[in-house]
Image 1 (tube, rainbow, N blue to C red):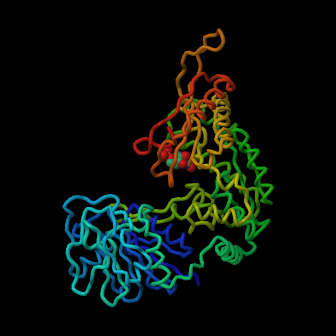
Image 2 (cartoon, helix red, strand yellow):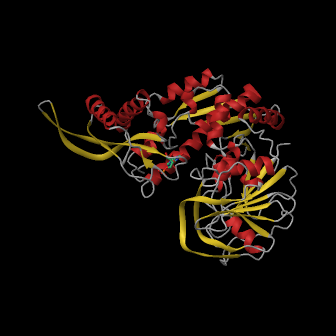
Length: 507
Ligand code: XMP
């Protein structure tokens, strides 16, 4: 039985980060909405309560009684989680004089307390709170303070219940990983037995059992998640897995050919479908971004469905859905938002059972599993690429000629990043074809041609992103290469907007 830490989500933006940190300790954990504690699960060994956008004394705050949890498992409250446990037991929580945000240092630590084992006085921690605990319940005591925050951490006397006001899950908390290790390993007794290899072993066994001799179909996109899901399933059920890779004609230059080659090299049974004609004709004259997305989404489902029907007796649809897609996120009203699928609408339309072998993994874990499965870095380290492909990078209507121009320019940029060793330093990069023409001069000729924008961002999760500070020399070379080699382009710009308020894609 895989022992787990449960993380109760009270809606903080860093809840997923807590999960990732615990997994980095090779300890399995699951994130559940604060009011969905799995009381009947015998594999739970400890509980972490997350932060929240609310104040504990707010009417709308997520309230929770710890009946059936407290005393049964070790508990660690983080920020709101700490305030809630203090408040529920008679402590006082009040608005801080001024919102505390940023770095602080632990000026006092109870070195005897197991939560602070091996954490030195002076350690930097990350604070982000509008409220502060001003007095503790009677049987609680302070175990750490900063200059500004007296109750930076507390413990209930003779009980395995702790609260920390700071955020150990955030990188800026230097001692954060040590603190989480102290809780998860020393206090909860976590065996740290979660690894890519152990995941593959148990998942392959489970898939064999779950699928038996059934036939399974899976849509490949060329991206990391669907590729890893395919290789994992292939290991479990071999020829009973059929993969379908639809080319909508809006992929990168040579992408379809190269990725098909990689898939075949991995021993996958894959059908490649060139459906570009259908997509180009349906997209002709369409300029509105959401309309483009809808046409491509529906077209994809139609083509996939038609191909899948050619295979006899298919029972399952497999998808590369990963954990962040599945975690039921809390909306501010406290209702849970439905988890979403990679290929929205497909499972319903096809009337197949759904198999999602990566649904418990974070992105970095998917990559680790892929590596362990022997997949090439080319596939594993690929930048994210939008499902509608170059359609959302051609502003305005789409023609084959525009796609050709964009593919050529994009290829020079991406190849340049690879050749300069910059590819792995950016989260995602691509070129945008602008609906603008401008005057230039080439030799003695006046030109009146298209402008493109280069886009490269750094990010950890695509929720926020900064424009990548690429070297000028590199940008200069890419610009010259594009203008010299790509017929139809005479101007190159670099997008220096961050997300928010901009987005990564232009459409
Ligand atoms: P934005 O542009 O919203 O993009 O900052 C965030 C991430 O999502 C990708 N993206 C998409 N992926 N279908 C997809 O599969 C889409 O319609 C789509 N739109 C944006 C984008 O490339 C980035 O990684």
